[in-house]
Each structure stands twice: as C-alpha cells, then as structure tokens.
Length: 140
Image (cartoon, rainbow, N blue to C red; front, side, top):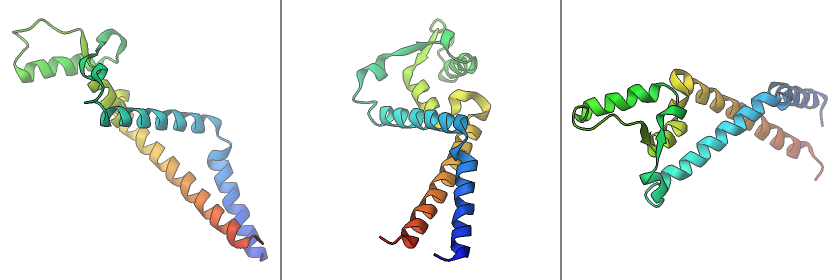
C-alpha cells in the first residue's frame, strides 16, 4: 500500500469517525427517527389489513396543538361542522402518516427528516468508500 493511499484512507476514517462515529446523540436521534419511519411505513402498507388502525382514534389532549386546528379545518371543508358535535380525537391513520412524513413534528419536521437523510448519505457513502478501499488494499 502506497504512502499516499494510506494517508488518504486515514483522512476518510477520521472524517467518518469525527463526523458521526463519536457523536452519540446524532446517532441515537438518527436511529430513533429511522425506526419511526420504518415502523410507520410498515403500518401504512398494511393499514387495510389491521382493523385497529382503521377504527382507533387518538385523543387531542395528547397530541401537538396543530391537530386541533387541522381537525376543525377538515370539518369545515367537509361541511360537517354544524351537523356533528366537535370531535375530541383524530383517526390513528393521521398520526401514522404524519409520523412517516415528518408533519407530526410541526413546521420543521421536513427539515429534521432531510437532515437525517443527509446524515445517512454521508455515513453510507464514507462507509462504502472505506470498505472498498480496505478490500482493495488488503492481502486477502
């Protein structure tokens, strides 16, 4: 292995480690968000098979405040605001879809998910580069 190749590999390892390898909180937050996206994606795919998703409702008292205005706007658009009494819960499908798209976290949920995507791209690309560079330079 040449001296320049070794130096280049050390630079990539340092970048990989210092950017995300040692940042415990970035890693924990990334994993939690990836788990949320994965689980809600599975639930969205199988929502017709699971009766609990179709029939369950989540009380507004445990949700962020923007759900109250969203529910009222939906009632007005559907023309049911005067016919039915105000609801105090929203369908579980709303929560699952909002968790999957990032809307649950408010105005900046999309930014959080975009940041997660960039973190995963950097980790994945530097990891793949290191893997192939190590295999190319190894004796086996």
